[in-house]
Image (tube, rainbow, N blue to C red; front, side, top):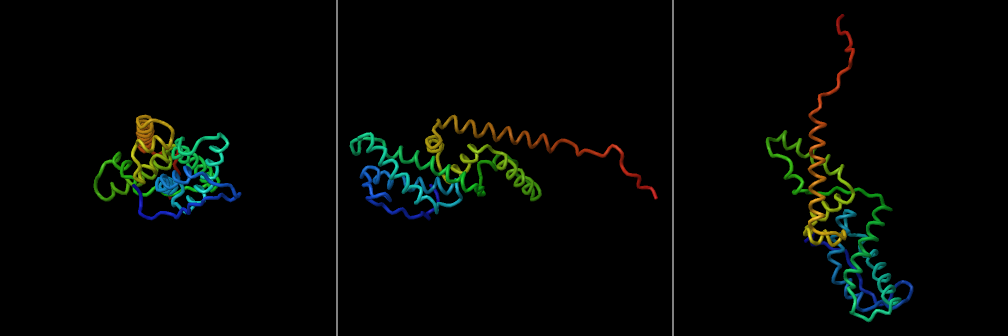
Length: 199
């Protein structure tokens, strides 16, 4: 799905406050770890902070289920953990204020026609302009798709349907492409009184 490099996540039976971590939550953490690393890489640019975020989420979800007196292995702990991880990851990214390059956006590049080398340069500039103007939600979608996520997985992470995620993404992309084309088509404004060049 994404690169072979993964940050390490050390499974622990006790959290930082000395509370016992539920076995079902620990198992779920191992199940979703690969997906969490890919998500962190997509949002932050690398997965270096994924382990610390996951450790915090594991402790929080474990405490939440204990407060509800939920019997072990009776809840959808993997889904709960992934949602908690996603929310904390976005909050962490907002604090960092990072903007990372998205890499090879092959799906977006398909919107722009192929041609000679100067046309390829124009296409690359258009692609950069498109990416810069994407909404935060669709920028995340682009990064997830670039990381290898299927539309169903993207939809699950964003709490929507695959059709809504896909349609909204391409709708905005086409609107931005049309907007950029319209701006490029406008003639450059000229000064109403050009300077007198006569000697």
